[in-house]
View 1 (cartoon, rainbow, N blue to C red):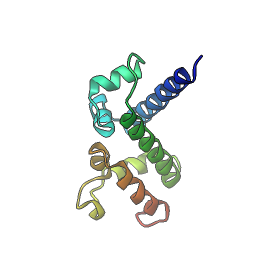
View 2: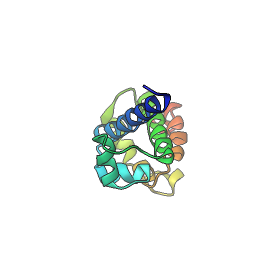
View 3: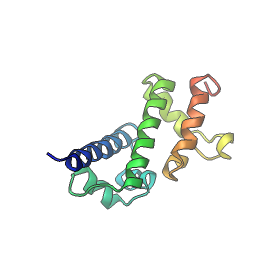
View 4: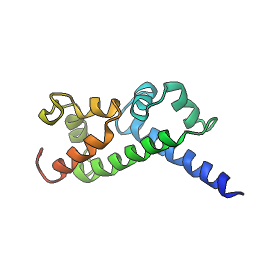
Length: 124
């Protein structure tokens, strides 16, 4: 197998992990996962089914989602109910928007920064 093939397989696994995490942990639809990744619901389905490969920018978005997954896990220690409550809470730092709304706008990095505040107890 060539280096290019290995990279393509790694990219496919990365995007699939991000899709599964966002679908299961955040309870997002394909359309919402697509919004978070800057893609369509159809692209999400194709990536999940491995019938198409994501572009570089979509891979970067998937990597940001996985950074968010780690940050949320660290902050909420696996307490999904508490995490979901926080994700749906309008926050002043987001001018009254919820963290989930920011994620769906593709502003995952902003949410990761704020999650660090949760981890430090700022929003506990």
